[in-house]
Image (cartoon, chains in turn purple, red):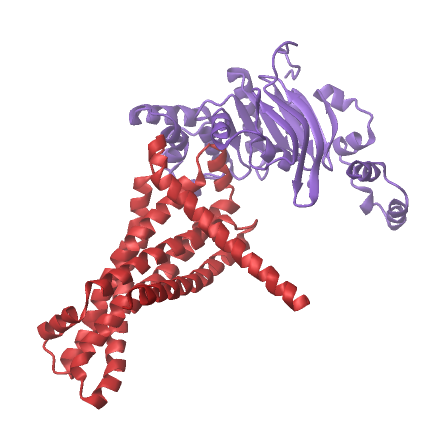
Length: 284
Length: 265
């Protein structure tokens, strides 16, 4: 399967453009100036370890966290400066698939998928029913309209949530850990779905994950986040051939030096680590 | 000095909490009143199902409790009135204390236990499982979708439940009146109705509307401010019950004093 982007045209306006994005929780800054662009139709995979700030980045991109500085342009509109009604307009163009699905437990699967349509469109009830059936079919859940989310397995919940996110035909889809907590076969199925969305509908896709295999499979480009900074940005090939030590450490799954041995640990405490020094400089 | 700082801090915290409650109430009111003008009608279907849940389904337990409260009031009143040979005043005592004070208050406390806690638990669980975030990314305001229907349901149901509670309390008193105080049932009811002025009932109902707003605001705010993790839902639920009971008593005191000084009633 080829992962080279075949659509890139230099003059096309990026679907998402992030400039010097900083996000803080209280006093603590977790993202220290992130820059990247996502082109229309491109699939960008955001990689990073636990606590690297990748989930915060995703939450900020969909407007769930307010950045403390910088701008996020989605289709040319700045998310950070948008009024709440402008934000709603932007959000109608995006879909988000949450880690646990986040289906509404009090509604059936069909009602979950129909909710954005009922809220934002004036479609006839019969039309909505047809769209719901189509969307569920798209994710391989035909016939599950009347099930409650609690009756579905983890993988089915994710598929149903994906159907809900696709209900409004979004131009940009965000995925938070799409394969977390799923067995390899189901996870591969979700990857297939993402690839299908990309090929069939040319949706711009942003995926946050720490599953390397799935990342290399679906990505056009990858963004590696480490301790709130962009460590590397490039195509899967570029990432594979990268010689940057932290990139290699992440891709080769080398454990943090803490676990290596007492002596190393002592050395690590006394020696200056380049990454922590850099963060300290940045914070002033 | 530290003591003073602590007092200052907790005062600021309390004011901050009240501020959040008022702001939440304001936003819920905005979506109920102004929302429909902008083509975002309040979700009546959801409000009705909330009203069923927190109103109609509360009737059996509320009836039982307020019937007993009426009976207890009659017994306590009779304990003192018996010495003056004024057993006929039992009906008046029960009717007035039920409709002015205990009807609204006991109703509020039953509703806090059933619905205030449920609001916090429901919204808290949705917060923990990212359902609130999901609403927001779908451009659906959680305030309009979840909070406003609960406010509407509570504001409408609490007065209705209070009227029911008053009636059941008077019936409870009637049981004692008929059994022990030489009333016939019809005379007891007549005496109760005669002893009540309209403002006895309306002040009680006005208070119950305020109680409904308070309970909805605290339950929803505690739910929305639930932190990460399932055990936080339990904490929010407990806090919702304790804070609601406290604030309902404060609101009760405020309005009772207001009616007293405003009208000398």
